[in-house]
Length: 260
Image (cartoon, rainbow, N blue to C red; front, top):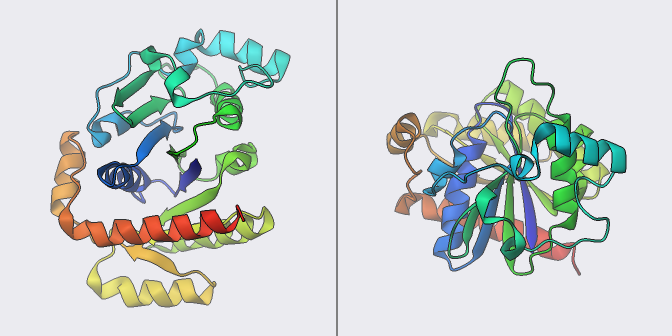
C-alpha cells in the first residue's frame, strides 16, 4: 500500500492531477482508492468518471455532531484504537467503486455557520491511520494549502506529491513543502501543472535554486479545461502518459526507498 498525499495551493490543479494519475494507475492494472479530503470540493468523483456516493464518510458515521462527540470525547478519530480498515470493509453508501477503482469523500461543509472543518480533519486522521489495504494505491486529494500539516494528518503519508503552477506563490509552497518533507522524514515529488513552453526553463531554474527537481511538466490543455468546465470526467490523454509515468516512477522509487 502506498499513501500519496497530493498537495498544492488553490488553483494549482491538484484535483485534476489526482484524477489523471488515478486513471493512469487503474489503466496499468493497479488498485486505486481516491480520498477526497477537501471539504469544499464538490466534483472530484465526476473527474474520476465515477458516480456520486450516497454519503460522505462523516455522514455515514452519523454526521458532524456524532463524529465530533466520538472524535473529541474518545480521541480515537471515530474508530476503534486497534481497528484495521480495508477498502473492501468500507460502507457501500459512502464509496463509489468500479472494480478496483474507488472513491470516498471524508466530509463536506454544506451550510452557513455549520462550523469549522476540525471534525473532518480529525476523522480523516483516524481513518488514514487505520486504513490497511495491501496492494492498493491510496491517493489523498488534500485541501488547498497546508492545513493537513498543522493537523498532523501528514503522519499517515508515505510520500507527498506537490502540484504547482508557474507562480511565485506556488514556488513558495513547494519550497515550504520540501523543507517540511526533510524535517518529518518523508519523500516528496513535485510536478508542474499548466506549464506553457515559454516558462518551463524559468520554472526549472527557480526550482533548482531551492533544490527541487520536477518529475514532470504538464502542459496547459484546452480539452482538460473544457472537461473541468462541464463537470465531465478528466480525459486520460495519450500525450500525457509519459508525464504520468514519470510521476509513477518517481513516487515508486522514493516510496520504496523508505521501506528498505
